[in-house]
Image (cartoon, rainbow, N blue to C red; front, side, top):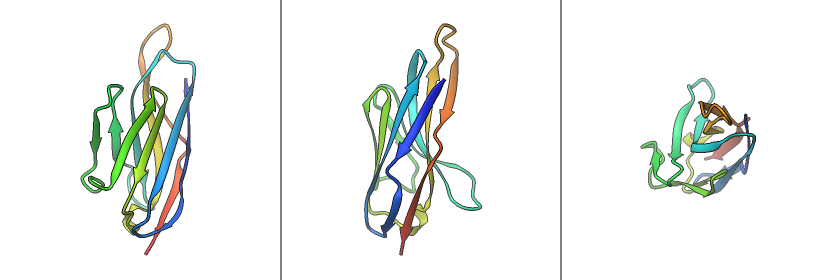
Length: 120
């Protein structure tokens, strides 16, 4: 089981920046991909950015050029958010895809979410 703890959310004015962090802990064989998702009020959760264990990244079109996902080590991931817009306001969730100990079967875990609010 993987536990994910996010931090770094808050209130920022449009055009500002925030950096989200997500740390993974627990008992597992290996964490593979990690990513950030967000959910705005009355909307479905959507992908923001993902990063593989090897460092390959992918972004939603709406954040390309403004957000950067990075991985400090196998269990720590960041989301640098620049040029924030009011439409970026949402709860941001970290997700980890991992392999269980012994069976090596795959599973996913989600963090509790961190609120990002961008004022106009």
